[in-house]
Length: 392
Ligand SMILES: *Cc1c(COP(=O)(O)O)cnc(C)c1O
Image 1 (tube, protein in one colour):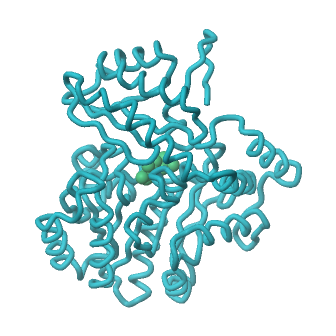
Image 2: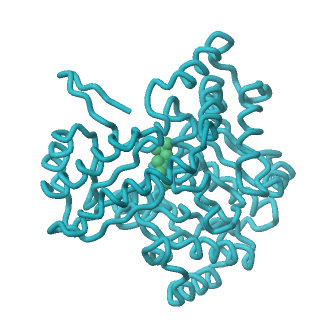
């Protein structure tokens, strides 16, 4: 849980190293998994060959994944898994005789990565569209889903998205969304009903539903995958970040058999993607071990629920602070949103004085701690968030 600075100070990591170190650092089981694999083989290509670690991890992911997902493509980072998801959607439509369906529909406020395909579906204002106008693909953006996990389905928003999907259906290949939690785009929560509506619209118009679970996957919101809150399964799903427990870079794009089979039967005879380090055995071994840890003991559900209660209790006072616009908690995600941009230097050093590492951005002071955090450590994290909010 702790990071040691050059001057000897120890900090509790409230960020899980960008949300991926869910079991903390130097976990003996994860260390051992990497060591064991290193003793056998560090790497071998995954084209033409497969290997035990890759197959075993793919099978485990499909056991855990929402119903209907039946194939796995390994990528080397979250952004690449989004590129692959987009490519899958286009290749699928093309294989089904709809080569003209090349655009995606998404909502504003999203974040899907920094490579060009992924960047093009990030929020067009908060993202980097302005710097790359003319280069990024132009997709169809709906308004942000209304705020609130418990907000239900807003009629106005539903009508707006229905209309947009219908108007563009002939040119759309897929709808892409971060289900329930928008991460780096603004740490906002929306209702599972919004996700369910998009599933319905995909079915009505022959679009694929692509869910980006890179931030939300592996328990962060209290469910193994955030789409479980909505009771819907995607056609394509991206996972990354916590997949390896933060040890190595690995991501995956899962899809249904229908999507995989159509692509394999189509032009080219397969998905047009092949990363050199696809299914790296060291990464696969540690990912498999990390999935095992999620289910160990009482399992992640209990631990994430305890963190949720701790964050709710600890952040309640923040509502009374001057300059605080909103306080929200879902699963192991706690957010204090200010009415203004955070003064990063002041906020960070206030948290450091409390012995906690936080990395605020824009108007947000937030924590996504490792699931292994103890109650007293979590109290330090929420205290540090309050201190940062006061200082910012
Ligand atoms: C972090 C993130 C990505 C990009 O993953 P990288 O591994 O940084 O390329 C994509 N989508 C979401 C929702 C993310 O949180």
